[in-house]
Structure formats: structure tokens, C-alpha cells
Image (cartoon, rainbow, N blue to C red; front, side, top):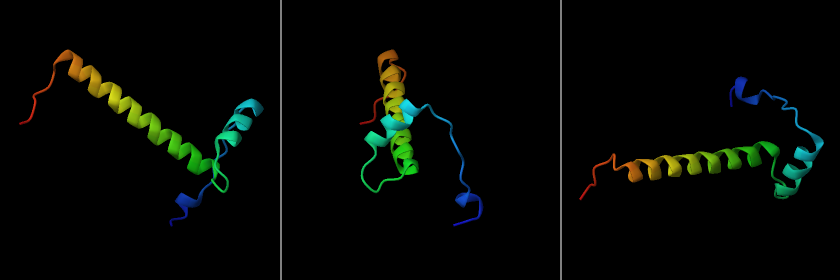
Length: 64
């Protein structure tokens, strides 16, 4: 682990947001782990939406 990867950043959130995230967290899970899981899910949803848009426009070649 590099010194840079150990840096901690603070992200200001409203108390309501913090409470919602706290309820979503699994026991023993860090907020960092929860946020990375959420980011991965969002990235997957965006990719799926982009692929649907490409399919719907017909801008692809099917592979056999």
C-alpha cells in the first residue's frame, strides 16, 4: 500500500444522508466499501444504458 492510497478524504454530507448510508451499510462494512459498491453498481447501470442505446439505434454489428 502506498502512502498516497492511505490518505483519507472527508466528504461533507447532510445528517440525513449519513443516516441513510449508515442503514445501508452491512455490519463491519466501512463507508468506503459501501461507496465503492454503490459506484460499481452505478457504473454497471450506465454501461447497460449505453449498450441499450447503441442497440436501439442499430449502431453495432452482430458477431456470429
